[in-house]
Image: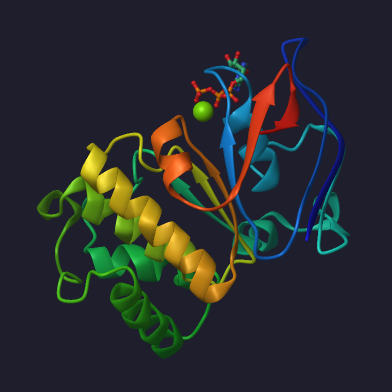
Length: 215
Ligand SMILES: Nc1ncnc2c1ncn2[C@@H]1O[C@H](COP(=O)(O)OP(=O)(O)OP(=O)(O)O)[C@@H](O)[C@H]1O
Ligand SMILES: [Mg+2]
């Protein structure tokens, strides 16, 4: 599904990723750990096309991401962030739908899919709320629905529970785990939380010295 070969990334001449090799199979749930500054976010940014000057190769279903258009790569990889990144002046439903509108899908198709996702992430009835009217856990559920709108092949999450209290963090991880098991979606989740990683089934890897180590 994802094959990474000799991946390298430097900033201002300082190497951060130093020849990383990794394969992720379709349907795998992978937890990525690693100390602060080890290059986890850098790695995700290469996978979703926000960093392009990397060395080495990344193939998704045998296609090099260098050959993909940016919007195409971002459709294939939905991303969830620590700080939710919702638009404050849009309702939860609008935030989710916007992800489809930028790709020029029909309004009815987008709305149908968004409705289905609100159900799936446990937010039915809260579609018309603005982000400020939702709890942190609920805002992250909206962000997950948004990331899933275009049916990505891979879901990337960068510290998705970093801004949540332990209870909400657990529930969000449970939601990821459920989506993985029910829909077979391939997922790469960066997390610092050893407790959460222990609590859910999945492959555990660690970014260390610019490469990946299996745990
Ligand atoms: N755009 C950039 N320009 C220069 N240096 C950068 C840039 N982005 C990241 N770095 C550096 O690259 C290294 C890796 O950063 P990265 O954000 O990938 O770490 P991380 O593993 O995600 O850390 P954290 O757990 O704190 O989020 C750090 O030393 C950081 O300062
Ligand atoms: Mg980071």
